[in-house]
Image (cartoon, rainbow, N blue to C red; front, side, top):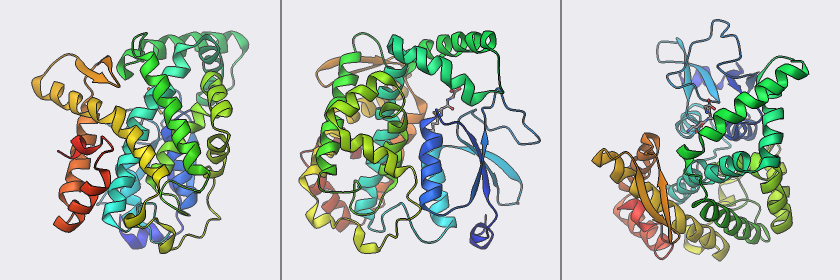
Length: 349
Ligand SMILES: N[C@@H](CCC(=O)N[C@@H](CS)C(=O)NCC(=O)O)C(=O)O
C-alpha cells in the first residue's frame, strides 16, 4: 500500500469481536492513530465470507488490506500490522522514535501478547464463574441472534473447545500458581507506575500500552475472578484500561516520551517482572523447537513449566533479537546497560 493511498480517508476493514484481546488492542491503536476503520463483527467460522479472502491462519482480528498489486488480502498478527501502519500513516506514532526506547516498548508489547495472555486464558477457562460467564457471552458476540437452547449449546461447545486448549498456553494445576502470582505482581508494578505516570513510557502511549490494554480488557474488565483481583489490588489499572480504549483526543508531542537516560524506577520494576518470567519461556521454547522436542520444559519463577512448543513464540524471540542487532553499537551498549539486572538480558543473547 502506498503512503498516499493509505493517507486517504478510505477506512480499512477488519473482522473481530469484543472478547478478543488482540481485536481490542488493534481497535485502540486505530482510534489513537486516527486511522479510519470499519469493524466487521464476527469470527471466521460464524460469519459469511461475503467475498472476503481467507487468512492463512484463522485468527482474530483479521485485516483486509491491499497487497503491492492492490489485491485485497486477509492479514493477521497485530505486532507487524502495527509496524505496517506506522509506515503507512504519518503522525501520532505508537512506536517511539528513539530506537532504544522502541526496543523496550517492543519487549513490553511482546510480554503482553505472549505472557499476559496466559493469565487471560487461564482465569477465563480455569474457574467455574469465569467459564460460565464467557461461555454464555462469547457466543452472543460471535454469532447471529440465537434462542436459549442454541445459546446453551454454543456455551457448551465453546467452553469445551477452549478448556481443551488450556494445555497450549501451559495452564494446569502446577502452573496455575505461577501464572496467578505473576499477574498479581504485574498488577502491583503497573499500579505503582500509574501513581505518577499516565502511560508505560511517559505521557503518550506506546505499542506496549496497547498490548497490555488488550489483555486487560478481558482480565480487568470481563472475567470475574481476575476482575475481582484487579479491582482489589489495582484500582488505577482498572481505570486505566477504560482510558486506553479511546485515546483519539490525546495530542502527543515528541518530548512526551521518557528520556532513556532517566527511566523511572517504577518502569524498571515492570521490566524486572517481565525478566522474572518471560525469558525462561522464550528460551526454552526456542530450544525445544530447535531440538524438535514435543514438550517445552522450563523452570519459571522456581516452578516446573511444561507446555507445547509454539512456533510463533520462536518468531517473537527472533524479532526482538533482530531489533537488538539493528541498534548502533552505542545504542546497543546503552540498551544493554538499561536492562542489566532486570532478568531480560538472556532474550537478547
Ligand atoms: N499473534 C496474534 C494473536 C491473535 C490471536 O491469538 N487471536 C485469537 C483470538 S484473541 C484467535 O483468533 N484464536 C483462534 C480461535 O480462537 O479460534 C496477534 O497478535 O494478532
